[in-house]
Image (cartoon, rainbow, N blue to C red; front, side):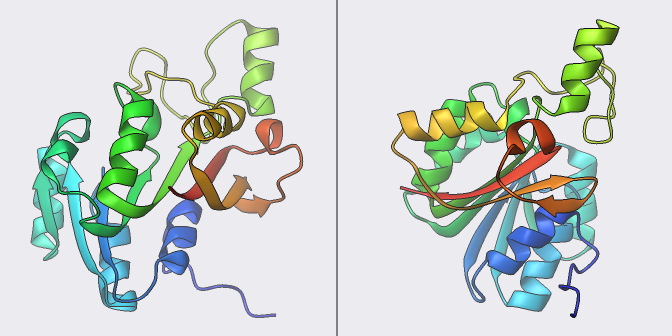
Length: 201
């Protein structure tokens, strides 16, 4: 059996790259240094745009020939018209948003569908660190100490599913990962280090 092409991307980004339809218009929010955008443009023929708050990352993207602007997604998504993109992407950033619920609304206003990935704070290692160590954990999926982290909302897979249900958001598909490998849905809320959801309204 041939292994799926990952293009050297993180597992969550590789899933998204495979699922985005060729030739689509895509907005990558919090795009970092643009690895996913580059794959979408070169491998899928997409018109990929990006927003990134870190000016050094924006500079790296522009140096790679990517269409990225510096901006704060908590405020600047309001400047985009309804359904301007086929897909919006928010990878490993939801937990840093001021209001994740409002961010979700904006993702699905600006895009026809959205991909959202996030670290799962209900993973058993995190639960164990809190229960037995009594300290905020430092793990593979969250490698930064509590006083340095940009994470301000500790979201779990269960929390995210509940938010989607409250907002009548449809789950098109979902993927769960542990140690970089995809795992099944059963028990994902305690087994998965991070999750990816494809959603629409």
